[in-house]
Length: 636
Image (cartoon, rainbow, N blue to C red; front, side, top):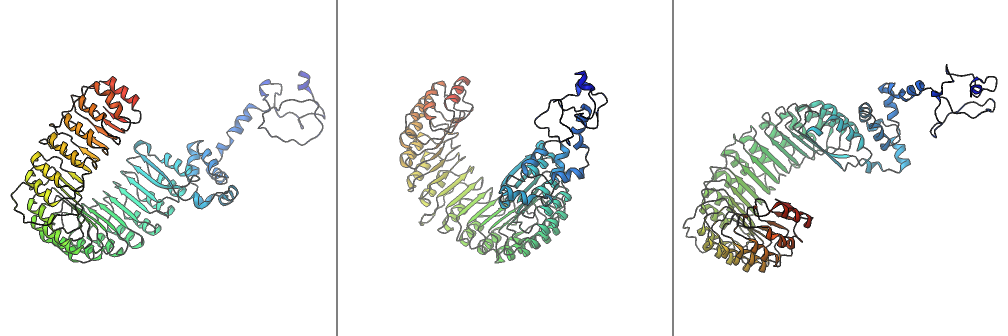
């Protein structure tokens, strides 16, 4: 071996002599791997076959050599990578490489088109933007956004991005999204104090296909961002702005002027948006804007007047907590004759809703089908009845916390609403109490299919008797929280329901007994699908026996806090409940481990079982049920 190291002359296998100071150092010898591809100019045939000698110092220098390159050089290398898979692999090396790759604009990839042609990739499909990503809390960072920008570019393109509740997302994060995700169509930014105009303006300049923008609790975003969106995103259709205190009228007006396809606008709690912004929005989007939602804004009657005149394409209108709008504003809106296409109207917590103004709205909206009124204290029976007469196309009406409405107004609206009303809901209206109405003989409301009277403590058997005469075609019935109704008032209503009940919610009706349930399932068992008896303490095993014998289509049964026992569950298991999917027995203290075999039989079709607060059932029994009913969610 020493002779080998001492070999010299014209036949040296390394021409030019040794390049190492001490070639006898055995630590310099490395095995010749399959990845080594070195070329030397041939001189004479080598007399020996020996491994290639590589210095450890030089090896380390060569391994680290790429890291010493400046960003400009790495940028030129990265933009010449052949495909998305290679770029994603390089992005995993370090944060530096990740951010360099994420800042390469799609147009800057030099061989993008050539690579796609060679690999047979359709660029339209690649940039279609069908991928969706959502980041929230601590998971939302600029690094993750950079990874998304690099990773989704060659896998269909990012189409929907939602970022919520993070202080670690900055304008830099939105910048990399704008560069790497030109296919972005939906962007939702919630509670991001570090996001400002710079980041959103970058989105506008790079994501021209943006269709939906949702901004919520972004305090540093101003009109500058909306001006950029208006200039660069002509395809915008949906805009939501909530609790953004620095957005003013100018930005909203610019979006309305430049985005001809704008169809939906929702503005909530933005103190600097006033009548000028709403007027500009409505006047510029006369023939495109279909949905408008205004809540907690400093606007006056002028805004409602403009809506009434220019809302020619508006189909859905929601108005909430507009404290500066008076009776005159709603009256002018109804008489503006511009809401001819309005189909859905929701008004919440507006003192300007009075008898006179609501009648005008009913007359000015001839195609209104859905109407919801909540917490409007100055509306009385006369205004409700007048509105029902004027709105001849009404199909659904909901009244909530309107305490000046009494049974006269409730039944009066039911009698005057026309022949199209299908659903009527009365929730927490304290003025509705049993009274001797003395209604004349009238034709029943044959169109009504769904009736909900919830948490109206004054509604009792007298009102039920009237409903039984007026509503013979009911299929969905919700009387939850009516403590005043008894068997005597409820049985006539059941007997007059000719169409067959499909859903019945009697939760909290503490004065109903097994007699009601037996009559209900006897008359409507062949159609009943949902039955809720939660909190009906007088319901016993007799009701479960009746249900088991008559309800073959029942899919949802709630007997929580009822006086049922193991015997009732056993009867239910022996019945014909082939479709029972949800069974709730929360708070049934007389149910014990003895019901385990019966629950096992019912569990063949169950998807959900509620055993919460069933103190008679042990944890070991529940564990057995979990193993046996592996396809059922059990709450214990």
